Amino acid sequence: MSRISSRFGEIIEKGKKAFIPYIMAGDPDISRTKKVIGILEDCGADIIELGVPFSDPLADGPVIQKAGQRALEQGVRLRSVIELVAEVRKTTSIPIILMTYYNPVFKYGEEKFVHDATTAGVDGLIAPDMLPEEAGSLVRFAKKSGLDTIFLLAPTSTEDRIRKVSKAASGFVYYVSITGITGAKLSMDHAIASHISKIREISGKPVAVGFGISTPEEASKVSMLADGVIVGSAIVKRVTDSDEELRKYLLALRKAIG
Image (cartoon, rainbow, N blue to C red; front, top):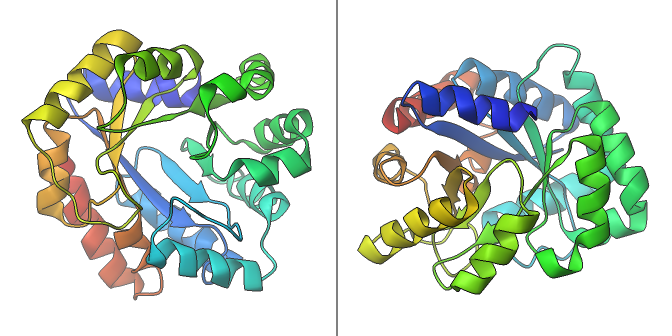
């Protein structure tokens, strides 16, 4: 069982929900990212998503796009992020997922990427532009190495799409709560609740919800429907706040998620 599946198993057994924060690796610099990873864990994060900066981030809103650009200007690339994970693994065992686009993985080489990432201690991969029907070789390499491949579903996903994603996905399914970019306004309704239940039923995997969640109140509402709550842009905005202010916000999210 992967570290991600094991963590979800523990959380679900306790009747709780996973808190999954996202930050951009290298924003404003690698040193701050290392420190923020520690703060996230101290404040009750269950799994951490590390963004890999990319020059053409189609799924990202302005906050994460700007964070990625700042990281790129610092010289941060996919290899740098893998090296960062290897460094933080000296002091933490929290599950870590890389969120990247497929192009950097393709350039790196799928097999080499999976080998280097898992050797460094990466537990999962999310690539928002990677379709399950086009990811066969990467999924095979990942399964052999124990790297979870996490795919996205949305309110517009058909049952056929749910089944395709469920077959390729491991760890959990990432449900995009809005049909837009990261950082957009959240709107949850009964149809989304029903859709999440269907995904859980078909996949047999936990469902974590992200995109558009910024306040503890929103995180609380989402936690009533999902197995995990993903918060990205709202945290990225705060990574340069004082440690005290950042901790205050993260602890409020953790309390709201339950």
